[in-house]
Length: 198
Image (tube, rainbow, N blue to C red; front, side, top):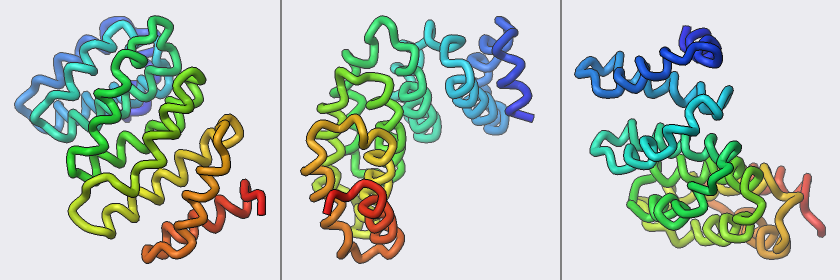
């Protein structure tokens, strides 16, 4: 149902406005349904939402963490059409959310990083630098960090051919061959099988 609505929004100029209004609803089903549909639109037709980029930037400050997470996802999707380089100015703030102490928040930032690096070639080196530091991100447990590292391996895989400093990325992934989280270890093994130079 949500996918049908999002698909329809590509040709319906009024629908996104109704969805924006839905974000203020007291009804959680309406609020989060609207947010998720906006996220789908940002994936399918980012041009439809790009004029409202600043709105989503403001949503990063929301006390509602679910809306914040969806805003992170949407902003990453909108980099595909960011002709005014709004994200470039937002870069430090966006990646600052890695350090909030929340696995889910940091995970959304990392999950969007592959898209960002592909959409913003001029920021690829900076994105890579941020991702290479995820082992230092403050999180509640070592297991949380290992989950985030697994997501980082996936992000690197999304744009590895474009990475200039491949050696540091390979070294990062090789360290995870001894990761205590089996899923992350497997991701490292698969990454190195696909991209490894040794």
